[in-house]
Length: 216
Image (cartoon, rainbow, N blue to C red; front, side, top):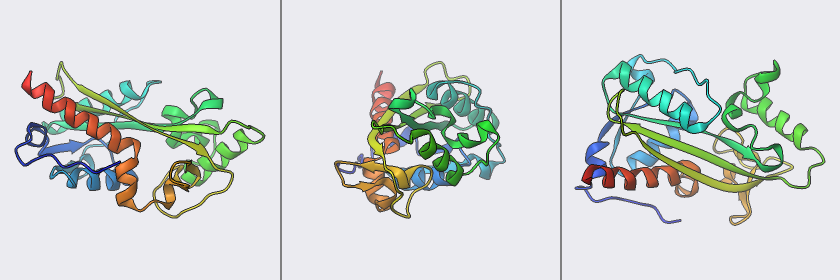
């Protein structure tokens, strides 16, 4: 998938030239920084503004993302961009889904990528169907009470590998195998991952939606 670069007069770039990113997740911050920098946008992580993580009480990505966006905007007075994302495994009914980052800790285990991956492999033992998708939902609000939040979803299809491969990325990336590329997400260089990932797909949709939103 080719990279994207709106012109300097893009209405979406103007609207998003300075936003607060509603996340303190180091992996997400790194990924978003690269993607947003490629289109000339300035991102201010909420942690730099003294904003803590919002509660994520919902069972859907969109509800959690909207809650986080409004929380960040309310505490900073800035437009906010929030992401809620996770791994959805077909044979597990979409699990771990919104609980991807704390999958192992739900049953009292360690909250870490390594623990999450161990539990996923144990749960999938003996399963023939290992198809899965990374899903990202982005929500952009101009203010905490924005009545017209802009929502975009990106989906990245793959399979759960039996063995890890690659040292890049985070989360489930070492096990997220991409048949069309013949590699796992963790084997992709950051620039290549940013051109394929669920977050970059969602962001492209959001930028297009924001441009149309501003013109309406």
